[in-house]
Image (cartoon, rainbow, N blue to C red; front, side):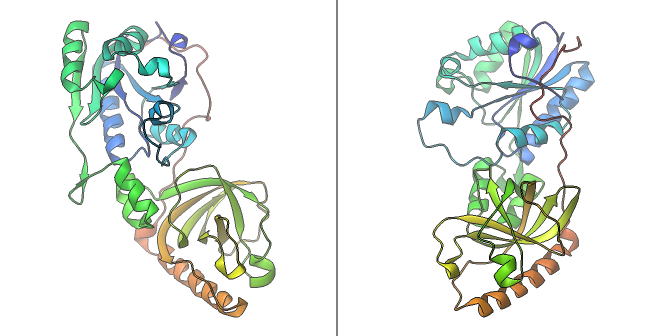
Length: 332
């Protein structure tokens, strides 16, 4: 997948495209179906498949309401989009100037003139342009005038409810990470760098932990979780605590991961944590012995959970080097 951040870098390089557009926070099952549909339609018609998305998220720029914590930040979002087959991702910087464009101005500048769009596929509730005035009906009228077709994907439902970023966010924030998996098509994951902590896990308790400085915004509610941990070169079982470590009187939120049967040095390494199932609430213990006994039980439970076939990890693998942009886009 080629990533393009400036429309001028690709203008004139594509003879015809099938485009889907959205913020794609989480790249959940609904987003995946939309991207895959655009990709398959493009292939059937001899067109280039193009995904258009934005950075930063429009809510961060418009400031009409406090932006929610995002499920996927840009790097991970691009990784996930790439796995569903599009040839080009147009990653546009969202600005106040862009927000003032009418649907017609935006479509003509970026999609018709920019990538010679022949077909546009949008989600059932997608709007674009100033005042969100570009809906399915107005875009269809614009398509008739500009020579492109518009199709709309029906809502994707799981367990009788529409798959949405809001629903996934609510599940994760309430600790129901297992229930979020079918909506995402994977376990909810965060990425962070291992930093020095208080050195209590291994020294005092016999359970060394990797303390994470997270770059993601959305965290499961405090508690203990069974997790998969991607460390350099392998994937290991683990148990994570999200919280303030009340037994030690802390007041700052931390994420600590104990990686089962692992003895490597991870300081400074970037690791990825996949949250599988919540084991219990965080609570204050009477002392080290009670805490150590509870952690021992947590590790046993975590190992049992992760040994079940339905807890098998579904890894994501980028199909490109994050941050790359095209040199000379090929003509299609």
